[in-house]
Amino acid sequence: MENPVYQSTKWLANLSQDVFTSRDRIRATAAIISNYSFEYPTWRDDCLPLGDGPEVLEFFFIINCLNFKFWYTDSKERFSASVPKKYFGAFAMFALLNNWLSEVPDLVKADYLRSLDIDEARYRLTGDRGPIPMLEERVRILNEVGEVLSEKYGDFSNLVRKSSFLCFNNGNGIVERLVKDFPSFGDEYTLNRKKIIFNKRAQLAPAMVGSRFRRNEVVFIKDVEKLTAFADYQVPKGLCSYGILEYSDALRNRISKKEILECGSREELEIRANTIYAVEKLIKEINSIRMGVDPVNAVQMDYHLWKMARKEEKQYHLTVTTAY
Image (cartoon, rainbow, N blue to C red; front, top):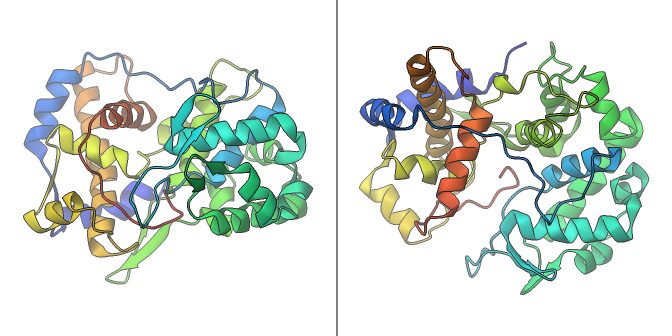
């Protein structure tokens, strides 16, 4: 079974009303960056665990259970934590979880997760200005994950082995199992009676594991090239910086004013669908220029766009969601 994300999103990208993918800018951008050395992220930052032990693999799945919305709905300010270095957004959560793991190794165990209570989570996941956003939802997800692991897998390492180290494996790959067995990983919507699938966190989990353990023959994700871009807040911003994504005046004004786009609204779905579509087209154009030499995949391109976007002050769209 192939990854259903691109096929389920391209129709909306081609019929969008407020978000547009510029083919001309794709060609122009590909010509400029085709000779870049596109990298995989190493995911060995100071806020992440050391080594390549099994607990590290478990940790990377745990962080992707919680890898969403790192800004406060009322103030729109980003979550931060000084532990002791100051981190923002996802990296602030990574640092707090890393501290938690160092003090409580059972953090990655199913029994601990399914019995975790809100008070413990608040104590562990409080940053500079208070608890992490959507704390209750994060606790609910960890409880769910603990229950499913206890019933079906024992741990995420076993899920990876049962998937034969494949993201897609006739319904039994890592991404497929995450979406099928863990309701909180679901990331699909219906518009005009058509299903639109993104599976951002379910795809990002094996991508991060695959990148961290890229040189490890014991844990090697075999088909990361089948993953699409991870449709979130930052990657669309990176595409806008290249001029590849263009927004209508109305949508651009809403984003600049930090208005919240409703989760599952047509505007939000158009941003995410065009992100998937544009990255796929950009990769295809670049690889045609490179003539099969060191072909670029979506994991590498996503990382390139994500790094670029995080350095820019331009406002990204805001949506209250557990998907990203």
